[in-house]
Amino acid sequence: MLDGAMYLTREDSWKESKLGRIFCADENVKISKNRGIISKSTYVSHLGSSKEFFPKFEYHLDGLKSIVIIVDGDKWIWNWADDFYPDATQLLDFYHAKEHLCQFAIIHFNDKKQSHKWIEKQCKTLLEGDVTDVIQAIKVLPFGSKKKEKTKENLINYCEKNRKRMNYKAFIKRGLLIGSGAIESAHRNVLQQRMKLSGQHWTKNDFNK
Image (cartoon, rainbow, N blue to C red; front, side, top):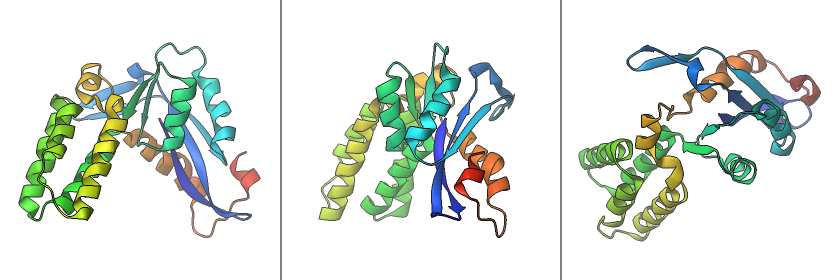
């Protein structure tokens, strides 16, 4: 899992720090029906460009035979995955996909109840069916205003572009996580608790030590 977040520096004000979290499938331990913990992780962080971050991160991927990359959809990560790990499983965080459905439904439907009903149906389809059915459900919606049609087109393009990353039924069957919460919590627990205390301004060199 990979993600970025902003931190305050003395030299350049707010800069993005990249963070990667690497763990094995058997380190994702179920502790109840709907909850699990990751028992062991390796973290890699860099304040700066992705070109500087990726060599540090890739060092820990050497020798791994089966790689699953789970992120919220940042383009810089997908480009890297396509170029250097084309055989890896790419997985778009389900909750970010749902967020796009929600943003669309708010604009397209005038009735809040109808909007919620449509969102839940499409999310169920994503989890139990195929993204193709969701794309078709978007396409058959009646024509609306220019703004509605633009948001419809954007959502269809988003789903088409991420089609292989939204095969959630197959991912769940493989026992994979379908959310990127583990990397988001890592930002809070690994970096923000130490690097975002009141009054702190880090130099870039100190941050990357």
